[in-house]
Every structure is written in structure tokens, then in C-alpha cells.
Image (tube, rainbow, N blue to C red):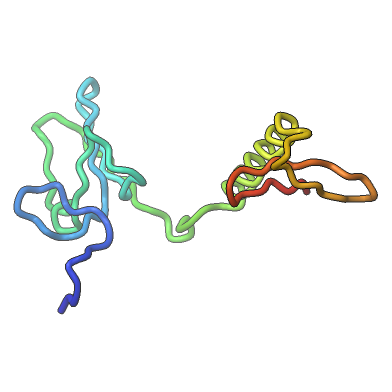
Length: 130
């Protein structure tokens, strides 16, 4: 029994269904193809989030092709490449902030290898070079 009114996740797009969505259905009208895959990260206006019951019973118009993308067991969460791309983006943003805010009164001095370098600061976030 649920103790609070709060629900985690998005609901199924089917009318009257209150279950949590587990997959996303997208139509490619120009190719007469329906793609059913893992739940999309964000709700899209032209995609339909379906619960597991409705994704199993999903049907398409006659003559259409259905592509079902099953999630692989080992692909849950970010990969090493995803994490490295995020780290590179943060590092690059830190370098940009350091260049644009050099000499700013809000910048924070960082000493590394005997060399002092100013790193920009905005609010509570700081960019620290590696």
C-alpha cells in the first residue's frame, strides 16, 4: 500500500492507465516504422511512454514494421566513455571560466606545482584544474 501521493517516474500514455512507464514508443511515419525501446530520458511530445503491459500488447497498422530494442543487461547506467566525456566537458568549462575571469575579485587562487593560477567562481561552484 502506498503511503504518500508522490509517484516516481512517468505514467503510461494510454488513457486510463496509471502504471509507471517502462518503454517509449516512437513512430517514423515516412518509413511506416514503429520503434519500441527503453524508456527515454526525457518525455518527448511525439513519443509515447508505455507500461510493460501495454508495450507487450502494442500493435501497429497493417503494413508497418515494428522494431523492438531490448535493453542489454550490462548497459545500465553511464559507461566509462560517458563519464570521461562529462569530466572533459567540466574541465573545458573550468578552463574557459579561468580565462574569462582572470583577475576577478570572486576568483579563487589555486597553487599547483609551485605555480599559482586563478580559477573562476560562480556562486557555490568552483572549477579546479587537474
